[in-house]
Length: 246
Image (cartoon, rainbow, N blue to C red; front, side):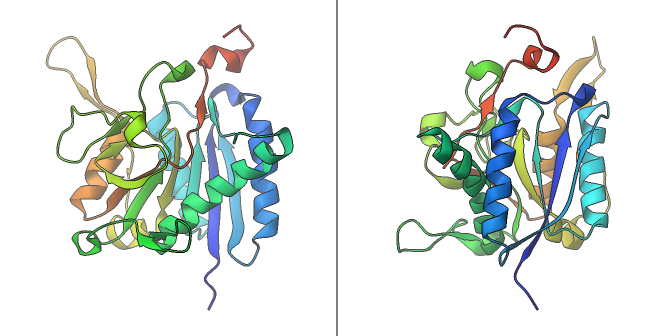
């Protein structure tokens, strides 16, 4: 037996465009994966030009499960992560941050300094982590992250209360997430896992996004939703994906 995490990577890339910020992130992630081959096995990777986003996310999860992945990392075309510091360090650390998020969620624990601590406390309230994600601001960094407190769907948790912490939350936006496929196979094996729900009682309105649907349904099945605030990805104006000025 091995404890290597079989990792899948899926990119919802509408119009097959990715922001240029992805380039450095992928260099960093490749370098990080090469240095921890005893812990990660990159099993599958693909990009998807599928409309709408719920169909894209479901297809990514389905294909990653078919490839026998344990986790699938999903990051949107207009979102990327780069750490601070010099150029070389920013590239390398970006990959380390992402893999650390997935590794810690797989173990259910983080180790600040020399003192490991549980991500979920008390752990017995959950049957495992279904999804972990980084807090991502609105496009262009103009609003608070889409991270919602447990038990209050109207309470957005400010970034200052998330930064540097790993904590259980009620809902999180899916711009930069990792989904636990081992958990899905056991507790939610058949999709759709992501589903847009709309209110058509009057003028059609967006009522529940596909990522919040996943969070709600996973929590109903006993799964935990976790926010890793140890890094905060960039979320750019989508016009950059088609060559227009931001």
